[in-house]
Image (tube, rainbow, N blue to C red):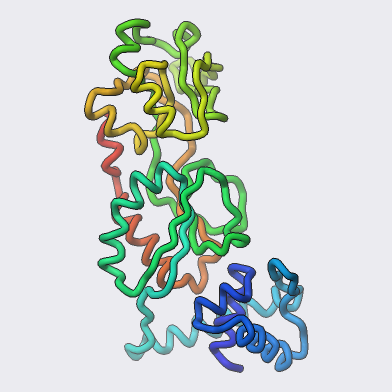
Length: 300
């Protein structure tokens, strides 16, 4: 059985798109379909359900997939053992990321990344919506969230700390809160969906429903509104660290940390036979954000 055909099958299983999988391997859609037909003819079973929009594995395909992976892994291990077959990252890497985080922390590093891997090209999709990786044909997604159960593979790139802060002008006018309960007397700027602030206190968990004066779906907009004096805001340190360092925002309620399980995650379809370009991207940003990321230094 042809190894290139197996590589194509495994990649189709990961991204559920014959044309995109073939394109990654330098194949036309017609040739890709022909290769899959050949595997199915050799095995005498159908491996893939085909529709106009996407594909999925048949039960036979699901059974065959781990064996195909194992064959390819053993071949790669054998080639590596004699010093041949190493594959450098190349081709197009499609990345999806939150708009603010991508603009502030991925874009500034892209030049260094591409200097290191000069055979790569990047398509960066910035959106605060949770995208369907398979439907969109993305190789990897960066997420700033608490992750629910998923069939996708995740790797933590960096911790995220959320703090409460406000502008000096707002605090001069309204005073500084000294406990979570004091927030009842303050106006707040919120990201939509984060109106309830949950604190860790000596008396246990305290959930405060804040008084919204302004809500938005963008973290930078909430931060900037707070800088303008509209109210207290809950912000991730990766978003507000520059304003805290400059004094445009002042952290409050330091003795009452927020409870949150969020982090910066890399999300991708499969941990086996991970494409070199995906592994390179994850390793590069894991190294860049390692230990205590630069944005965490704004808090004590």
